[in-house]
Each structure stands twice: as C-alpha cells, then as structure tokens.
Figure 1 (cartoon, rainbow, N blue to C red):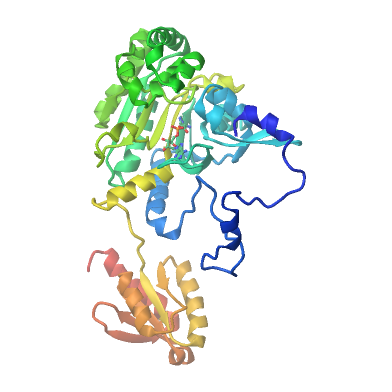
Figure 2 (cartoon, rainbow, N blue to C red):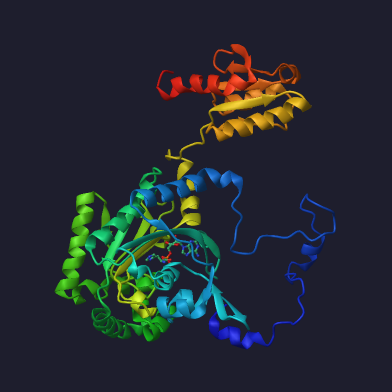
Length: 477
Ligand code: HAM
C-alpha cells in the first residue's frame, strides 16, 4: 500500500480480527470443493500476485540455486541473509521518494512497538545497512556478499511480475574499480550461460549526481517542449523525476524518447573514461553487450555504470521485444553507504529475478536444450515385506552417511514397480531385501543392466557396492 494512503487507512482497521472473504467471490469461496476436504468448507487460494513453487519446478529452481552458489564460491562472495522486514525509511532514503517501488509497491505496516516497517522490496539497501551495522568497513576491503531470498513488491500482477519473488544478488562494497563492475556483469552473464540460456547485457553510465542534475535539466527542457504529445505518466514524471521519462514503455512516447538528449554527453571526462574501462574489460572477457543510452534503472541510488540482463531469444510475437522484462539488473552505488549513515564506501552489485528467469527458461526449454543437471543416484534400495521395510530404512540411512545417494520407495510393495523406478533413475545397481534376507542377515545386489544377482552379507554390502561403483568413477563403464 502506498505510504500516503496508509495513514488515512489506519483508523479504519477493524480492532477485532475477522476472516477476510473477498466480496465478489464470497459465494464461491464458501461453497467450493476443490477435491480436497469436506464440501461446504472454504478452499483457500494463494494470494493474488503470489505463487507456490511446486516440486515439479525443482528441476529449474535447484540448478539456479546451485549455479548461484557455485558462482559465489568461485568469485569468493560470503553469504548474507538480512531480515525480510525493515524500517520503511531505509528504502525511502535509498531507493528514492519518487521511484515506483517506494511510491506504489511497498508493503507497509504500522506497528506500535517498532514503528513503520515494510517487507523488503529489494536487498541492496539492507546489505548497505548490514555493512554499517556489522562493522564490515573494518574487514579487508572489498567485502563481497551474496544473497538469495524473497522480495515483495505490491506491483500490478502480470506476466513475469509477482508480489513475492526471489532474487539472487551479488554486492561488492569497498572498491571503486571498473574491474568490479565488469565482474558483476560477468557473473550475471555466466549465471544464464552456464544453464545454456542466451542473454544480452544492456549497459550505460549515468555518471555522478551533479552530472545527472545537469542532464536532468536538459531532459526536462526537451520534454517540456513536447508536453502535449507525451503520456499521462510521463507528464507526472516530468514534474517529479525527469530521469524516469526514459523508463516509459508507452508507444506514443517512443519517438520522443528516441530523439531525447543522451546522458553520456553530460558525463565528465573522468566518468566517461571509467565507463570506457568497464567496457574494455567486458570486451576482453568476451561478454557481449549493447550500449543503451536510455537505460537509467528505476532506483535512485545508482552512480556510473548501470546494466540489465535480457533474454537474447527473439520473441515469437512481433513487437513484444520492447516490452520484454529484464531478468536482472544492477550497477554502481558509490554514495549509498554514506547516505545510510556509514563511511564513504564505493560499491556495486547486481540482482537477478529467479521466478521470472524460471518462467523464461521453462518456455525456452520447450524447444531448445538447456544445461540443467539431473539428480544422479548411485543405487536403488528395494524391499519386500514389513520386516524388510524397517531394515531397509535403517540400511538406507547408514549408506547415506557413507556418502551414497540412494533412490528408494518404501511405500510400493511390488518388487517389479520398485525395479522400474530403479530403471527410471538409471542406477547401475539395486539392493534388494526381503523377509528371508532379513532373517539370514544377507542382501541381494542386482546388476541393473545384466540382471545378474548375487547374495552378500548385509554387513559387507556397503564395501562391496562401493567397490562396484568405483569402476564407474574410474570411467570403466
Ligand atoms: P531491480 O531491477 O529492481 O533491481 O530487480 C532486479 C530483478 O528482480 C529484476 O530484473 C527482475 O528480474 C526481478 N524483479 C523485480 N521486480 C519483480 C517482480 N515484481 N516480479 C518478479 N521479478 C521481479 C534491484 O532489485 C537492485 N537491488 C539490484 C541491484 C543489486 N543493484 C545493485 N545491487
């Protein structure tokens, strides 16, 4: 809820908690049976703009998380988790009063004890706060941090826009070096490239505030002369925050935007040469990029380099490209830590939207191969009979401790079904235990390819299986 409105609403909040039933859907909500539970009981739906991440999505989410973590390890970022709830002021001061996120999209709550708090719409401001609170300026600089977690924006729900969404972010605090900017672009690029998904980097420099102020004045002059041709939103932007004029996606404003003065012409020589150095590094890294003079980003804390990541897949629907949403974005924010009350600390970062990336990758995977590693199991454990089930669970747990990854389904009683599952998991061996084996302290090892079975002592099974699996590690297949 916009902050302004919250104050007026405060008095209306009912004292006693009542279960909320959406008016229009009241009847439906009271009587619908969704195939679960008693008829006549209300079935709850996930909130508008939010979504469940179901196990079938795991094949996208898990590689993304693993990839994010591997990149963090390789590039030496330490994990940081900040709370989901923060003081409202943290974001108002850092992202800027006139930004869409602060004006329209924050979930704000009034709380007698802790004052006005909100669900974090992003994490860079929280990281800057934590850098100060945690005394991280005393650490060897720069400090490299990464995070993975949910963000909240009360956005109008539409394709790729959610009210709760995950971001992975990488932030480097304490270094003013074009190599930092290039490293962050590289990480964003690698994140998708490693998964087999092609992306495009759009990049620009917005210089320092004083350079930007001069540019803003020029931009405002230019737009004022065209006021009668621009959209309603742009008229507001012109008054409140002229830089946001460049974010406009309305068709009627495009020709005006295309002819608008470009910020790069207002940059000092030092800012220009900083940006050139970033581009030189990207050239050397072989990261393809497009210079985008209208890219200014929707948050106020940026200085110098700003960039966004887009799918490099031509849209199937003509004309859709310009409306395509960014998968990620970032840039330099040299003044933020000081603005938050800390020491002057140059910094830069990037955040990638996971829900949006999953949606785009899923669509791409319908026709193209992706590089999504599948889970690999070493063996399958099958059982027959109640006593065997108990022993099987114990042995599975013991083998797990030895580092083996074991497929099993103790809830299927047919051996045939269990062996079919073993085949699906493509394991080279299955261990089979029945009543007889429990009594005799033995277990059957079945070679899944040849079907040959041998009976071994249960106590020796772990070593025998390990030896057999070793020949696969050695490449002797
Ligand atoms: P942002 O551009 O606001 O930047 O968000 C980064 C990414 O989060 C977007 O490109 C998008 O993929 C995802 N995202 C944003 N809003 C939504 C939404 N409503 N639904 C789904 N996905 C969304 C930041 O948040 C900055 N903190 C990035 C940064 C880090 N700058 C420096 N360090």
